[in-house]
Length: 121
Image (cartoon, rainbow, N blue to C red; front, side, top):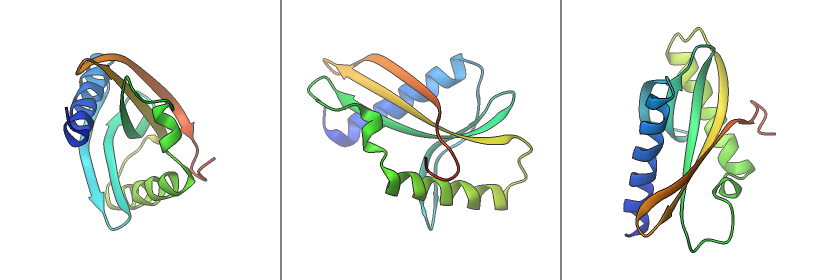
């Protein structure tokens, strides 16, 4: 499976996971001048801005390690613009979902709630 297909399949896996766990999907692949947010979803308390990182079994680093300070800053700026344009009553939260594949099938998923705060830390 090529890298682009793997990423798309990882996002689909994350969407299914979120729905199964009671999240309401607001939008996927939100794009703005600052960048893209893979998934925006709501739970009972939060509006969640979620970065999905997908890796195959041959990767030596955790998927979350790819969300560096620069990427976090773009996500925060994108989320702020989204919140400015849409009236959301919930507290924002930044999550990362790691999806790992073996033999072209999802083998594990790790949802890191509150992976970083609004300052990128």
